[in-house]
Length: 130
Image (cartoon, rainbow, N blue to C red; front, side, top):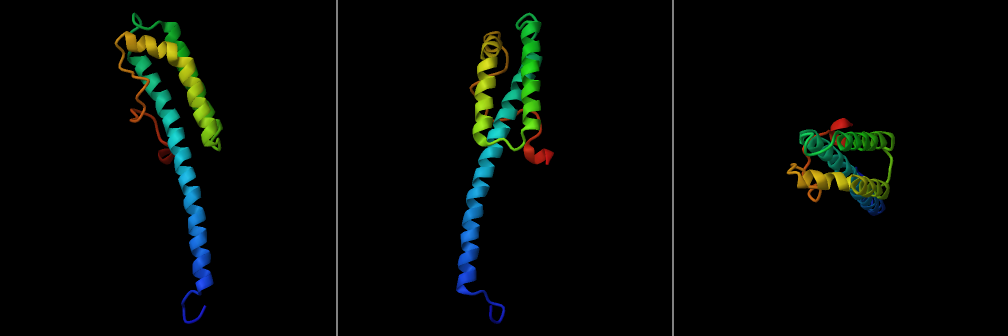
């Protein structure tokens, strides 16, 4: 380095590092978005279940939803380093497990639509917790 300027090699090295970090940052953003999607789904189902009256959804179904949701929240807490694919698998697993109950809620006039998970109604995001 002469007179406070970077050499061509140093500039190239810095650009290559920036490209590498850009890819890692994109992967991390995807992982966080996937994690938030699972968390959002769980909180949405849980909230919708709480808002449905007992005559439209049995207490046993409500208990099952609460247990499944609490287990997923616990799983998220205990698997902070889980990869995107693991989180996606967990989402599919919980959706499959809760599908019969969410269908009942939807048919009973509940406010939950399991097909729309783009907006979250409650619960902290990873950014809010960290």
